[in-house]
Image (cartoon, rainbow, N blue to C red; front, side, top):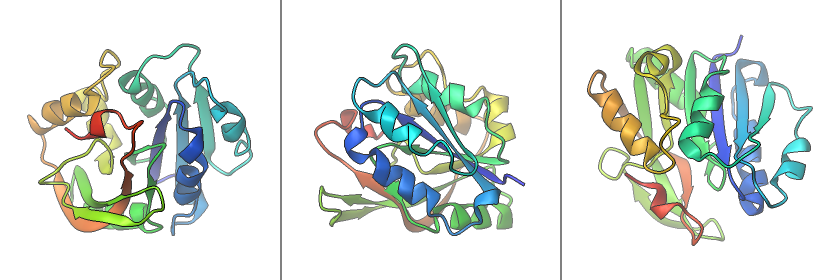
Length: 201
């Protein structure tokens, strides 16, 4: 049974895409319990060939947008086919700890959460730690595990937002529901020149 969906959105991140996918595949949960959905937003680099290398992985699905539509559109598109009770976004240039899904789901289910966000570590090009950051104080776009039915209830990510889509969904979500916080840094946030405005709120 699929318990959780990891949703990866990608646009021209071929340099870091394999690292992201490997970290998501390497979760401590059995592979039959989670799926990975990658939405490629009409990349013009070698991303397509990289993604096709993983087409035979268990519970791994790739969607290729014909035109570049933005992160909001891509996240919305991926969320519509998610099979997991829980869904969490990961950016294609970031990566996650092997207990990322396990800890988030354990916390959420133990506390009857509708959403839970974990802390993160900022890393440099060589994966050295720059800082440890609290998601509640310095929120970022990803690393928030949502209950899929609640996300659907509020309308998921806005397909019309090409930028600030996560700020928009965060504001819309918190009008009706709370986000809990797990103070464990399970997400690896790689900030670089190609990052989308730092990708924070």
